[in-house]
Image (tube, one colour):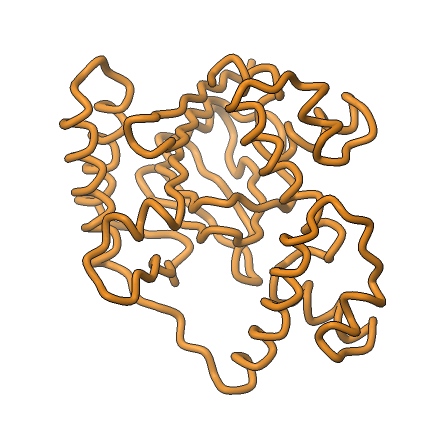
Length: 266
């Protein structure tokens, strides 16, 4: 039987942590507003990220950038267990000492580093214990600092940068009008593309169709409403889901837990 433990650490900027034991079902393609940094405790996980498939075994780290589309499924016989934390770009920016205030881009999807794995394991133990916020903050900053030091940034060519900028404009428009009924023709016209070229470029860049992206970010907004005391029905209605079942199905596909489990943890 699957067991999932979810927690939110408000003394760490609202850091979300998930302990997933013996995952029985697959997560379809989705994304998170924060990064995913996971440690595989036993078994193995296979997942899509950056246009390809990746395999993460015991004691390896899974790294998924904020907003990056991915999926996840069990890749072994027997029990598979992993723990994940979801630091936001804002959290990284608040910790990084640079003038540009740029959150990192993790080029590697799977990291095999025994020292970082041990440090992350220690961080999870601290987060799961009744200790001081100073210790939690010190452990978190130390781990994220070492993690960033071990990774590089993604370099983009001129052509890729041009496409990235146009799709980024469409993304911004979708986010600014998250609850509006936006037409595909409107989005394609905004970035001076045909509808076919736009959908193909959007999915290649983001990993989701514009509609799937809209659903994903409505879910992210609903999570915020639940954290701030809204009941599940109100949250679902506010972000545009037509009924409780529709909302719950998408929510569990995204988080691995039900809206009620999430709200109780909050």
